Image (cartoon, rainbow, N blue to C red; front, side, top):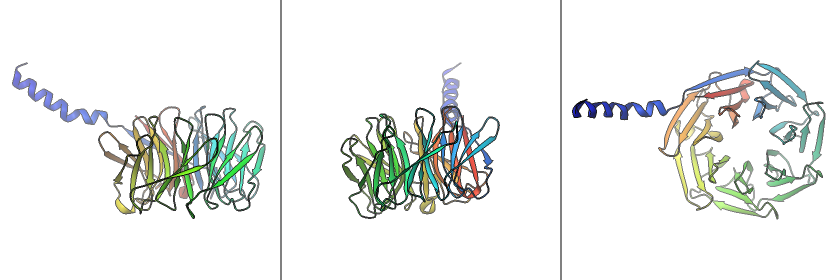
Length: 326
């Protein structure tokens, strides 16, 4: 091959190489058994199942994506399940948003144990996450509190967020076991001391920022969806350096659910009709979007599966979804 031909060949490779690097996305959806369930949060478990909270039907549901088979578990009346998470024994824990309790479901027997919050002002328990020591942390949005439950004793400790009407929402834990939470009512991210539960608030540069959900990468960079301003933001926990990028759908994108998959940040835009699943590459600042076939009906949370895909709950469409990423 002469020099001219080699130059042309390499130029073609440079042009088409990015195309090979982009993912192929297929979105599969299943209608949940109980109409009007309003699936709020999904949970991808180690056995390949997708769980969800049927908030308006007081159920927890489990889908086997390989067979399309559902099983629903009924909770105490008036629970209003919101967020959910699995412990190391396979029990499913959930926040009972309407009842003001934390619940634990044993999938083997269907039995439910409830843990009432010790303060009547602790309204609206929200997002639960386990730390590496097995402690269950959760936000209490309406009560402006952060909670910690010890599963071995059932003891619950609550602390109030310093900023009034902070509306603590999304919650995630960094590589050192430190919980961080989004203050949906302020331009702040909260940090909780795992031992003392003292809260330190980190101020975002834009006064109008309103972080809703958060995700943390393995190198301790925190990402958040700015629901009000239609952007996603970055906060480096180690350095304090910040950044933000407008979402593809603009000021009415209403970005909501967010997670990290590989080296990319994935999130949902709840403003467009249909809702979209968006991939953001931090290295190139490039966005890609895919519409949700059913419309989405507001995707409020998402999480990675064991196979490198994404589990979603499509609230208004009464569906759960699997985003297959290749």
